[in-house]
Length: 81
Image 1 (cartoon, rainbow, N blue to C red):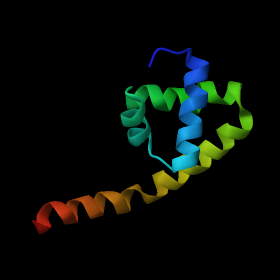
Image 2: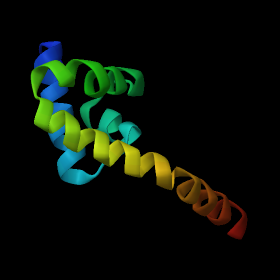
Image 3: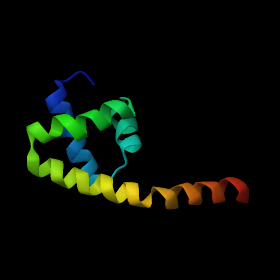
Image 4: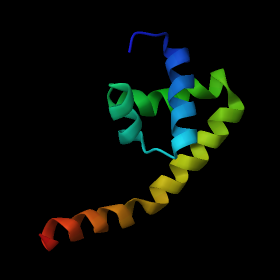
């Protein structure tokens, strides 16, 4: 993805907000690393669009609160086979 970092941050933010996506899912969709996604939506996006930043942070907070459930479900699927 060859765009300016600020533009990329806005695109990633919109994607995460619209799809309630995780950082890893957004990284997979845009073809960049999860550390790039995290840097963009946690640092650069604040300066670009404060309202979008707030929406993205809400999604990321919900994902963080639910991650132990997703991990347990993945382990259950792994050993159920």
